[in-house]
Image 1 (cartoon, one colour):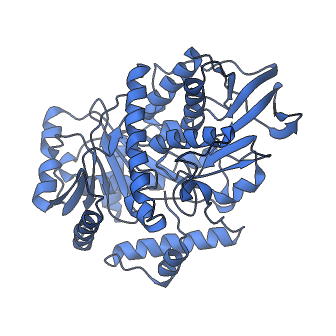
Image 2 (image 1 turned 90 degrees about the vertical axis):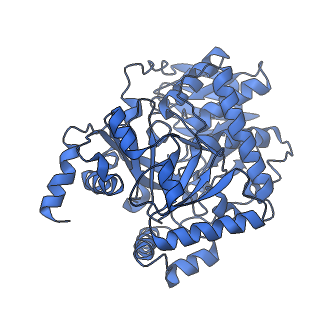
Image 3 (image 1 turned 45 degrees about the vertical axis):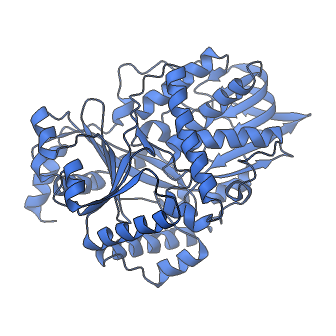
Length: 472
């Protein structure tokens, strides 16, 4: 990047605060007190993000008399659940393409369960009066290169043949630019019902409030330090106390799982985003974003972008940073070199918005697994269940994962637990230095494919055959 171009694009970042826009909210609720002393309960939920909160809420919906305790190491939603782009997708498989590749015999059932899950999220938002700016806008997957436009059309024709294209429309260059006007857009696939947009932090806070109203005892600033059998149940130690429970559900995702053998199945990928100042009416008219759809481009190193309730544009993605050793550290949440790159890409996509400034720039860790979508399991003779590996599509899929964990803890055979997706696990990541080397080679290969009309090299073709990958 030339120095003049660097200064031109980075000027837009001069006032950006290094904090997640969603969490920078004066209405942010006060945390619940920390646990001090000993607790007992029927179900202990560890983790105060979407995964844990949905599990606690659904447990009380299934049995209002069930005694449920939830532990959160810091504050509900402070990590991935409060830092994401706010795309709530029906897909349980990190997109239809990934699901069709991995579970072709189950894909119609997985799509049906995913659509039902999104409907149930919408219903829960209404039932509990959760003010999270939920909008069933749909999403457009856009092509920004000729080869991507060809691939989108071919993909649309394939899913039509398979009976999977309901609610999805192919848009040529003119049609997609009538939806949102960027000179880079060459085609699009419009999924009209399969995605909602929302304020992710407000969803977390609303779920927490609903749990408390139903009688869940929530303790924040209470990390779970270890997990051990205790009589007929399990015991978890915390800094100032302990919890004994008949059953335990682990929703800690990228943070070290209390079942140690699960840790090798996920690695942290740091993802970054920018948020603009609110756009004026004339600026919105310049880009013609009438339907407020979520958007994502079709590159391997992709961007995702959407409008907030007050007409800011969130612009994120592209870089997916894996820290050597898989460490999760606060200093990784801020990466100015990625913000500069994202600003350049933003104004390439929307040159008519030159002069717009960014108010927030932030990052956070995503729990990635080698098949890109969640996996599930039990430990300690079925007394403990876990779900992890949502790989960036957890806003919606974590609710499904909560249902799976509750099914597993109940020992029930359901349409969810019978799925191959639930019964089988992904391949684990290798130890260092092999994990870092393999991920670095994969990232280099994906960038190279983007620069060469999508052509995948031998490394990527081998990874495809093995069902392995790296994504954010």
